[in-house]
Image (cartoon, rainbow, N blue to C red; front, side):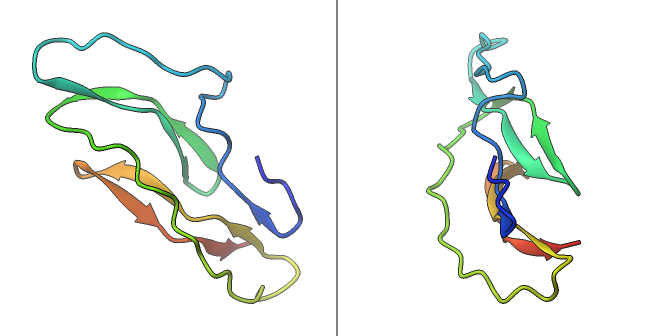
Length: 97
């Protein structure tokens, strides 16, 4: 995890215990949505799960221009992708207290 005073990046792509999740599909037509980290006021692990349908790979990370820090009590939460509504949705980086 990026613990620099400037920002707080998402932890590595592995789960909290450092392992990758692997699970057999429950039946034909199911595909795996990999577990991933999401910011919910803090970084939380969203476990991998199967869905019926196509799961595209997580897109390449978006290069963000970080705006000026609004104050010394703020820290930057890096933008990241989260699986929402059957697709990978980009959540922009944001300054938080």
